[in-house]
Length: 189
Image (tube, rainbow, N blue to C red):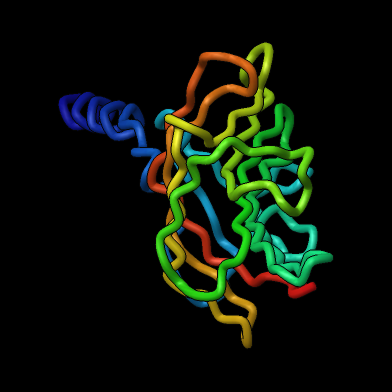
């Protein structure tokens, strides 16, 4: 009887251990694996397709991807995104104008989305789980930081890390983005 009781206690202890959200994030790689993930206020956000399954995406409309597109004025904008398409949905992205090499980019200007391609670089996080206004942006006093560790325009791979404290669109609430990483194949347009 003692063996069974010890086994039941051990099973209970093992099953009650919570997994560290950081352990659920993909490794920080640089080979175009179409992976990404981050913590939003300590909660892991990972790409998922519409069916609720984890997905690496295709980089072309999948839950993880990017594009390096040319503007009408000849400049280039790099956009990288992650989408959790389950309900309620969540997403993250950044937009960098004029990137040509790896480096660290601080996103602290007010995003002026009405300017289209001329808007300053910014980071955004959207989460339908948040009541009222679920969109958060980088901006003055609420900087996002993206470190590009690989930017390969021949193989179309961009990889790096990100973090930031973003503020609610038109509000006062903030979200802390930590331990972000991405390794995506981007489309060149």
